[in-house]
Amino acid sequence: MGSGEQSGRDVLTRSVRGQARRVGLGAALGCVHQLGEALVPVLIGVVIDQAVAGQDAGRLLMWLAVLAVVYVTLSWSFRLGARAGERGAEEAAHTLRLAIVRRVLDARGGAEDGRLPGELANVATEDAKRVGAVNMALMSGTWAVAGVTASAVALLLTSVPLGLIVLLGTPVLLWLGHLLSKPLERRSEAEQDRAAHASGVAADLVAGLRVLKGLGARRAAVERYRRTSRLSLAATLRAARAESWQTGLVLALTGGFIALIALVGGRLALDGSLSLGQLVSAVGLALFLLGPLETFAWVNAELAQGRASAARIAQVLSAEPAVVGGHDPVPQPVRGALRLRGVRLGDGAEGVDLDVAAGRLTGIAVTDPACAEALLRCLGRERDPESGTVELDGVPLTRFDPAQLRAAVLVAAHDAVLFDGSLADNVTPRAQPRGDGAQGDGAPDGSAAERPAGDADGDADAELLTQRAMSAAHADEVARSLPHGTATGVGEGGRSLSGGQRQRVLLARALRAGPPVLVVHDPTTAVDALTEARIAEGLREIRRGRTTLVVTNSPALLAVADRVVLLDGGRVGAEGTHAELVRADATYRTAVLA
View 1 (cartoon, one colour):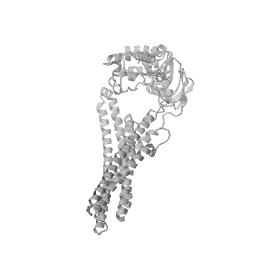
View 2: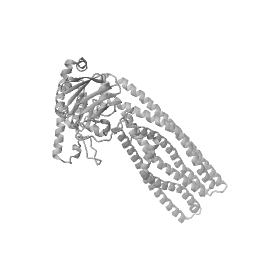
View 3: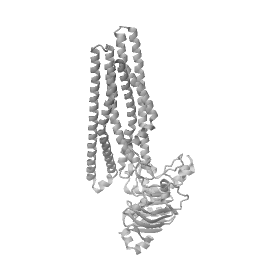
């Protein structure tokens, strides 16, 4: 997913084709049900003409038995057909959700650009559900066509004028229903856009509630959500009005159509062209037609909403990747030497030339935070530089598969999130064996994934690695302060932890992953000075012999670095140890000590 332009029609077509077997089975069973429903008024008319009017008890019992068989058949065919259709709709929605999640999690990125997380969640839930429901709508539409056809044939056999009215009038009703569904389709798309945006704003508000309270900006944020919610409500009401008008007009047209059939049937009965039983059958068939024709109205509405949602899904699936190319595996073992030459990206990096020695701890201090962000995006290959190259062990990053590259070069952003679960679950990778040979989120060499289940030595080694990472990041102190230690839940986004506790757990997670190259950004901005100094020593010790970049202006972290580079104005301004730069460079002193 995500490669090539896709349209809403493509999404709908794949969704329907993927469930063709279930929809076909449901449609076949539904046609049996509709045939049975159409037979009921015909059989009742036969009973009246042959049994009641003729006062033949034997025939009456026979036709009642036939009616019973028809009722049992149509009942079971409906239940089984509806089950197949619902299964198809749910499976189609599930498949779409998986496709959307795969695209959002694609290592090439791009799907999230310009969209809030809540918007993507809305696309993956509500829009996927509406597109999946198109399968049920198509199946129901097939049922309705079968019902109308059966009724038309029965009416033709009873009376040619009545049959012709049904055969000629139904296509006109369908065409009018399609025209009336166009405004609903447009307003449904606008409704989903507004609802998705409101969901995104709400998610942001909840995620940043603690910060908003601290800044005293809660009222402004609530007002922002209130405005967004009102716009979403207005769009929803417009779509509801369009749907009510569409449904009401179609039902009115359908009612007029049924009345016309009843009127013609009555006049034919009065002039003797129809018997009493045939008149009862004609009126019964006319009343039965209400069901299929109302189904046509519902199908039109479902298709209109499904087309609108499919267009929104197509926008996500066909979003341009943030980075392109790169299929080569990362050569093993990774030495970890990084080189940047003439790297330019946005307003942050303006021609950065930088060499990072393998196996060393390098500090990066900046005078402009935008430069740090640009550097992190390049090293994590979230964005490729506008010009220049970034190399790992002499090979440009653009040649590597992005997923494998990020296992070798882990960029731990300062605003990374914790997941809802225990502290241990957030620190320890849960790699599982995979049939395609891909690795999970555990150790880059796949050792966690390859370890046999129940391997006691492997489990002990994994536990030791976790303890070392927790200790180095001083997250073990966090665990001791919690009621259930590492088994304590941290809440969504780690909201049950303080800012400093979250930072230590995030750093422990990065250290536990143990990548050949680790890039951390401001990992200690929310901890006290004493803890920061201890974390700096722990970081240096646990990463000894492996390439580590610390992008920060923290003196405690820069002091333990083997080498420090100052990025000033988007370029390398000075290099040396922390002590040397403090003595010799005024810009460095201002950036780090001020």
